[in-house]
Amino acid sequence: RLKRELPHLQIEINGGIHTLPEASAHLGHVDGVMIGRAAYDNPWMLREADTHFFGAGESTARPALPTRDAVIAAMLPYVRDWQERGWHPRAILRHMLGLFAFQPGARKYRQLLSGPMAEDADGAELLLAAVAQIPDRVLVA
Image (cartoon, rainbow, N blue to C red; front, side):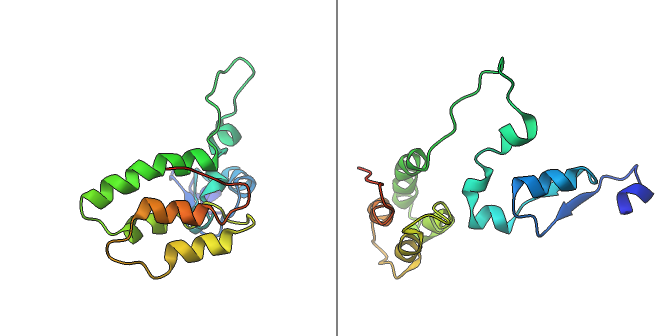
């Protein structure tokens, strides 16, 4: 209603958006959609956001979508680097909690990453141990 009454204003909606199709539906009425908590709780939902919103025609070459395993593999040196700079692993790993949302083993994965953690814990090893709780995931550092 606000956008109809004031079409010259930039109107964006924030809150309660849980899926890309929901975001698309809102974009029929407003100029922008912000996805916050849902993206944090289940970041994998954004994996296909570019394709969903901007498409990829047959003539458009696009890179392959990443896998969760590729994301974890890319995070290992990142975790190590920040730990060498003095950051506690929790500060980094807490943002990884939702990566396996709605997957078998996700609860145990989250518990390992959010549970008690020694000051000198090896964040990369902890991440690998957490990933090992997800069936069919065997990553090597």
